[in-house]
Image (tube, rainbow, N blue to C red; front, side):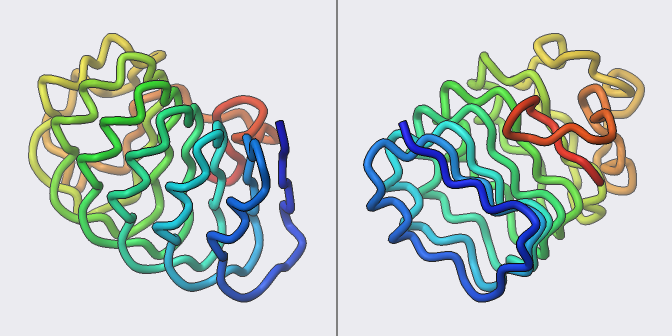
Length: 184
């Protein structure tokens, strides 16, 4: 099992999918840097990946649907970037996913029904995506989320997308170790 943790090193440039050449890469954490460009679709080739934390960078564009092929992924954090487009329904194929953090981006559309297939999902962060709209899919059982704060009170996501469907993170915790991240 290999881990690449390069948090907060002021790294610039684009992330390359060639990182997947590392055998048995389980953790890729390049959060809190100045990386730009898109999220590489080639990351789907990292078959052993359990934690992917690309949060707090300057990544833009859409989330590649190919990332739905990461069947071992437990923590998937793309928060605090400049990502847009719709949330790929293919993420519903990530059967071991426990934490999905997409907050503080520019996602549009709704929360895909396919996320309801994520029986292990305990934390879903989608707040601060003011273009999200629609209703909470009935397939996404809010009871499976830990402390779904406000979820039963709010049915529309648009201006209410700032609400998180999980316990807010405790300052000082990071995604790789606890499933939540600081500064969210």
